[in-house]
Length: 189
Image (cartoon, rainbow, N blue to C red; front, side):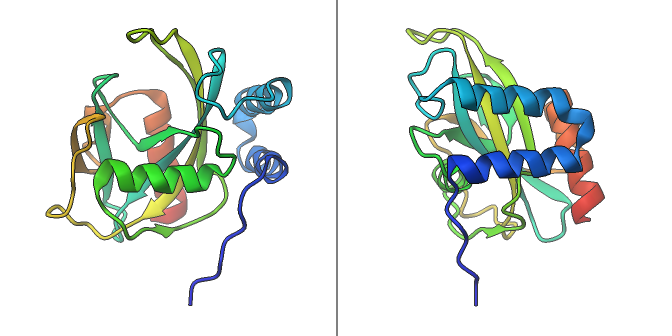
């Protein structure tokens, strides 16, 4: 029987950020920027807040923890974890799960932890009529069955594929990807 999870609120997100900081004190500057952003911007979960907005992402692994499900994002033209805009939803774990389903076509996920797995602030470049802005990305670790035949590629992606953990950095060498790999191997292997 699966225990029902608590729905996230601004207060629980702030509590989770403080817990995350206790676990990852080297990321203090980033955590403090996220907390300050949440305090200063009432509409921090809204997609049309052009300073920046929250996004929810899923670092999706298979049961062996040897494979990571990644998307080749169409707009950014790079391999990333699955995720997307909160669109007003404060429950960023629910956002991450929704985006994982929409972007992969897979439907059965096991949340390995409701605590924040990773967080990142990154600049999104100008695209069509959308100005450059910040994404305050809250990431969760999620598990699913390694299933190639049921993966669907959404319009937001060039491709979605399982990538062996030894090849993830070849697909994307950014520091935040390396950080998630290290956290996965340290805590979930």
